[in-house]
Length: 115
Ligand code: DGP
Image (tube, rainbow, N blue to C red; front, side):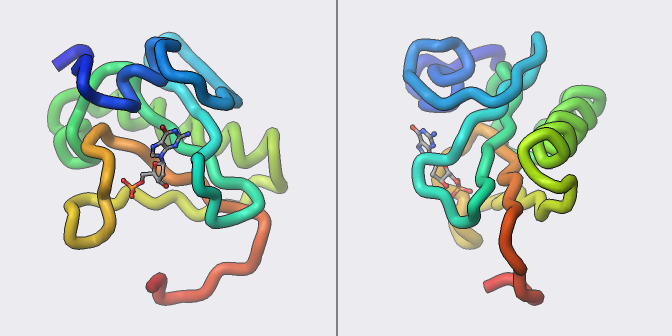
């Protein structure tokens, strides 16, 4: 689906809901998370609506690559280039917005395994 009018990340990507946008390409938008979990916490989303990372990988692999590359660029430009990239996939592991988004988390030590 190109866009879903009921999806908050579609609306942010379209500029209809305010967000602090830190990077944008024709097909990808990166904006600061409302509830940051690290000094740098940015969400990277495709403009087009895809439910989660596997759905995006199946539908449009170059777009997934562009999303990851944009996350890396944000981490390099706003931090030191080291970052954790998280795709919560499924409500049971914490996905709450069903428009694929990569969490770019950086700026503090991170434990392993993640909680
Ligand atoms: P997840 O739980 O993986 O689906 O992550 C969703 C994230 O999206 C969560 O960290 C909070 C963030 N979020 C939800 N609604 C909004 C919003 O309207 N604006 C912004 N900037 N972030 C949002």
